[in-house]
Image (tube, rainbow, N blue to C red; front, side, top):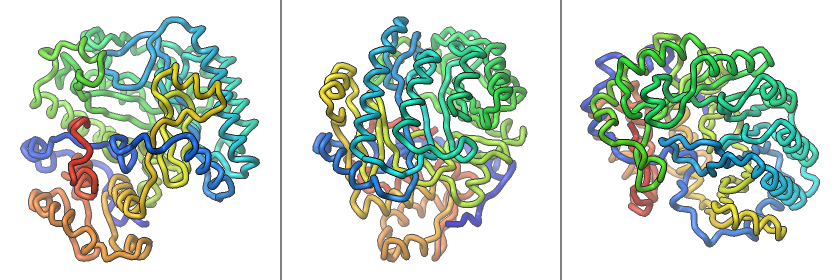
Length: 474
């Protein structure tokens, strides 16, 4: 699907006329990030290991590429803001039995799919801290994956890892490159020492820049840095200093995440003093300043909270209408079947979501018994596929052409989504979207609120089945 309404440069966002704080406050409510549709609260225990095995067998002969996600749950320290599924430990020997479990699960998946010819075009190591694994363990995992799956050439795929610069030396970077990884994402959040102390993540600029330079020297094609706004003690002035440093580092991609303070859901966040969090107004001021500064520095706003250089693959894919979204965020790869490996990982295979056990003991028991550790999931209906595609293209293209969906799904778009389009009328009045007979375009001011626009097409959210356990959109 082409994207005919893709603005570039500073015209995408920014400026007092486009960044209307009153409008943002009006729409700043909780909502999904839509790394999946339906979203995880819709997953249920009626989907299990047998369903997963049958699905893997069914898709083994498909032509579409594969994506692999490997979850490494360990961290040696806890960052108080974190909402990820992780195990905090300084006992590095815990990685050894986990490595054995991963190898068994990889074999089980590959054995179930048989001698599949499907090509792996995307690989992502997430966590936790994937570099909790030592170099030999990383070599072992990649050797097993390459033994059991067919990978495209390194320069044809997207093979990435999340790293903690505090646990990554030059030898680590070299090994990661040698085993075939070509993209790296580093967490920073904020360089201000007062903020770092408040969230228990002490990380110097020098060590971050060192890893970034080493990755470039070893041929990594794309570097991403994660930042976070809304953390304790942050102000526009303090975060501006961090932005200056990041812009000087000049990473290919920048993710600017909203800190969602949900201490009732994430225990580490209870260690954050709520009185030290920036006010709602200051948080919006930080966001506005950050976006304008990144755009002025030449970055392109990709969507949600992601920015990339004009020459980056994400930017080019968006301009060509070929951008996709999955559990790792925005991707240049086609809508692959995603196989999740490791404790708590989620896969999307053959039109269904499958999630592994979250508790290490339960995950271990299942894998040791030769069973898939899947404990819940969701099989999409035809209606789900339609809505998933609508939300996907909205999040990636900021526009919809109704005819594409009418051809692919045999519907009359304006009739099928009459309620959702009616809900967009108010957003049209607020200059967030432009509604036409043949499609819609998200206007520059609406890009920040793309989650709100997508939510009107979420059948389950509209029926209020999903609860309120989502972060606010801004």
